[in-house]
Length: 338
Ligand code: PMP
Image (cartoon, rainbow, N blue to C red; front, side, top):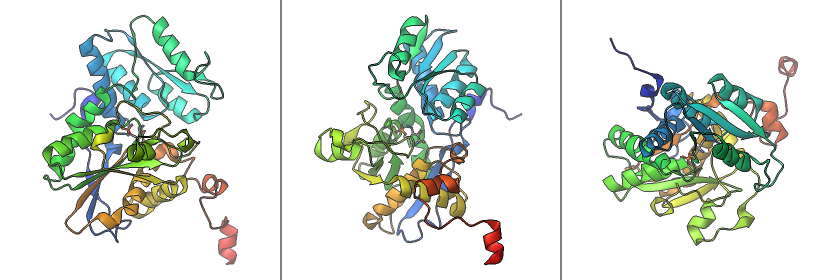
């Protein structure tokens, strides 16, 4: 019989899929590492399990303990699966701007969800930073994950995602392109790939409203770069310890509108139903395509599944409200009449 002993064993070995239509003018072969087939539907399952196992080894968490993290999305889902398989409790602390849908998904997989007001300063005792820290201090046998600075995050990608990409491309990869949030994916994969072949280029996708690109180019942490944006999962207003700026060759920034449009195109033209950091990644690659030749093999990583975004960029009204969709709304009647 062929079976897995628990759901965690199904994490990884995600497919590499050729992009055809969106990259038809790109000289290189473009392959997408599609992470949606992980059980939590995102690449974050990999690092969530690694961080829990690392905490167990270090004695930071003991049987029956409680995992605490300030997360709304993919990391929370990965931690929930790890908590179930390994017998821990999970508390996810969220800001109230997060959608009810996200909270419901986390509750569905057994997490306790604590909601904090968004409109308070980080130092305010009601903020989600303060509440997470307080809960961790007050809850016996608890462990605060901190995916930004916990280096087991990037280690997961150094041990798994990087070697998978190297093997799947038979060492022919020349460029790796990926969105950067905590920095775990780009830093872990990038380090592994550069150890195999230092000529491989590592391109980070950033978003307008984030500090990464300017910091990488100038060494200056510029607060003027920080403002609200829509693309989820990438860009930061802090410098997480997981971002290894030295292994990144170049950053490019993609607008919220372009990220949304290319996410829709991936679904409709390639049949790849993924989130908007994937749209940003493919658009970022197109922005840099001048640098590619026929001999290049580019791998672009798609972080998560499109189902979380059906009320957002896959919804025409949502797109129109933000000026992301130019054509006017047509009803079925308009179409019959025209
Ligand atoms: N895209 C999505 C949808 C994510 O959830 C994340 C994680 N924040 C990223 C991209 C960026 O990945 P990383 O944190 O490994 O840099």
